[in-house]
Length: 365
Ligand code: IPM
Ligand code: MG
Image 1 (tube, rainbow, N blue to C red):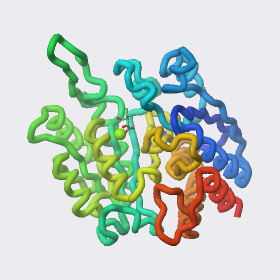
Image 2 (cartoon, helix red, strand yellow; image 1 turned 180 degrees about the horizontal axis):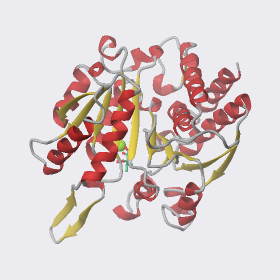
Image 3 (tube, rainbow, N blue to C red; image 1 turned 45 degrees about the horizontal axis):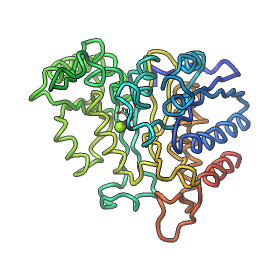
Image 4 (cartoon, rainbow, N blue to C red; image 1 turned 90 degrees about the horizontal axis):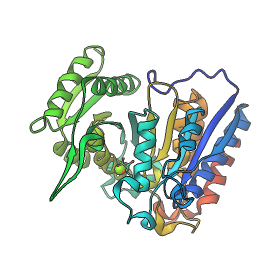
């Protein structure tokens, strides 16, 4: 896509910051790094990796959840690959000190206002969804979620006596730039945008609708539809194939992207990209740090590996290489290999490392 997160591959050396984070984060990031190294070797790109601290891992070192050095490292890199943050160990901390605050901080600090969350069903996994096969078959949608505004960041926010306040706010420029990302993306896909809001109740949503409608004029080939968020939540389950690009704000996007992810059968399969005005992007799986399976060697690394594929495409402009990684994932799934979260009868059970090795081998083939 054009717009945010694009770089011409001229440089031979790519600098990638790694933020493994908490829980299963380090285990799954290690597999994605193996995959990126295999891609580098096969296609002749030099990649340099440097690790930074974020979340609980950073708090445990006695510092802030988002150390200044980590932000600096990311700013000096071509792309950032992140694992996950948070866990029960840090749940008692006040909101602003929690690992999740570090995640919001890095998004804001790097200006990553556009969050792309694709939900696509791999043919080998249509049976893994909790919905009927005929509903799920062929799902291929992307949630474009505004990531640095809305109720997550609006001021005032906090406690006043016996009340708590969060503020939902959006400005015209904030809506314009995320709308353009969605329309640009739709041009490269099926040409359809569904803008999701709550314009029957919220003033921010009425402004959202107005602005999206105006930006649409720049994209005569794209079909635009507006949908209320409650209806969208229902339509996603009723008939998910109707969607191509879902454009929405921060909070609605958070909720709808979890729902969309589950349609595909496993949260362990879903990648994401967070992009800004430049080429720098942050790539992370949609799932969390999974404290319950940390250290067991059973976590599914595919969401992180697919996030690495998005990294190749959007931040390094290596389209073929990204497609190769996605092809490798599809091939290994077709061969029947499964981590426990996507296991089914007759499959070949594998752990985190084996899954990473299989993808590497497919890339070498
Ligand atoms: C996500 C997560 C985060 C969010 C949390 C961990 C702060 O749910 O990336 O979807 O709400 O954005
Ligand atoms: Mg979420």
